[in-house]
Length: 388
Length: 191
Image (cartoon, rainbow over all chains, first blue to last red; front, side, top):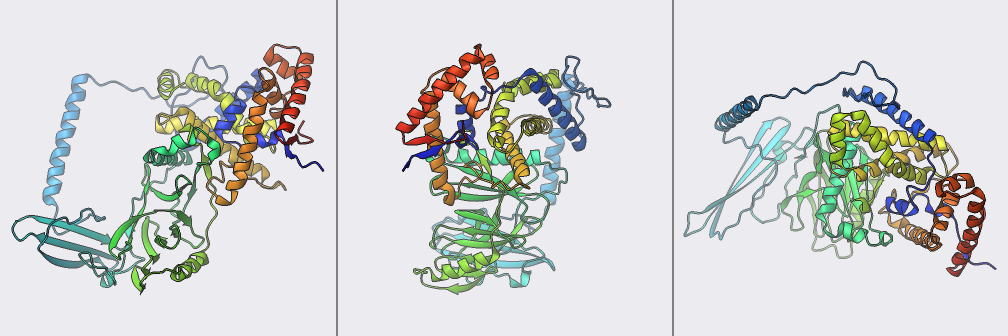
């Protein structure tokens, strides 16, 4: 009996770009006619797409012998300004901006903070701590919570202030539900309000623009991990892989970006589009000790769930935190369920506290809930790390 | 051609710059598209997809005013994505089972083992083909991977078609021996 493994040239199909280059990108036969045909077809598609997108740039040329003639193309001629006028205009603009900024700052009311993320932490050798908390209902559907922690050392007049502001949107909790816990004690009854992420109202976003933004986000991510390309380059068969996918979680017609890689223990990410770039999304939640904190949508697994407007995040094993989140049309994210090793939260409220989930019983319950939402299969696009 | 070189050329004459970019990367794009559509697309499908890729590249530049510093990377990514989309379109209504490769099913642990095995097979085959030396290794790839006929290969290597056939036959025999030594057997119907 012949037990040799069968191998054929079809094994070379569906390769990564590195392998394609190894096979040879200049070995095939593209004759002059085929080249002309493809160039003409390219230009035809390009002109049609350009027209559809309303791009008006002159791409005609007297030297061009391949393309179809194009009429009615707007010719844009850039006229250069004399240098001294240019400098003058720039200076005037800078002065106007400075004056405008100062005026705006002076007019701003000190009791209306607009900061949306916890930005500072109290660091002091505090002897006494006084806490004041106020909740202001900005409207019937919006709550703004301000917590000011003032710490003073007994011998010094040093004061540090930490400010946390959370905005709640229409679909979530009202100001009445909001309580704030200060200091390091677990905030057992805290409602995690919706976190407002960057959002865009642009309606002219093209897939090409999103593609470019996605590639930029991927590259930024790779640069964050120094070892990423180095691991990939010497031997691609080791299997360091990265892929990304677009999926519109919240139905606002602007797809969110999902990225996965298996470098180190692997990680998954969800980004939102801010009009120019894909940026990390965040949400209000709790840390393992039960304190309020802001999380990023980064974990071992980040899934687009089958239920509308929901995403799920799963940590490694039960020791990590896991989440089921709701995403509003304006990119606000609100936790539906949070699991940690010591606590479970439902709709931002503490629903259960336990010494430790050693046998992962609570995690199993969370997992059942997670599975009940179902996960969506995304159309992943591979990113060739050797191209980076 | 770099991003800067393209920009300079584009500022003077956009169509000339686009044609130059097309000529420089045609082989690269064609190879990527061919690799994805080899088993399911016709030559027309491949040429259509190549047109889609370059059109998308030109539009990308028109919209952003640059290639973000990595022209080859951007072209490769667009070519890969466009070819996968075309593949899906082509197999959508057929009975063909879609086999995601390592570039589309990257971090899926279920496929890791299979992908690793495929990678090993690819590396082995390419290593053995390369060990045949030039021009035999190129002839084997051109004949059995790119499906070129002896006349086309002969034109590429300034040989007669008869010489190509003879070299190809000997190289294939040697490749089969090398594969056998490694514990593999050439699939029927692949030659």
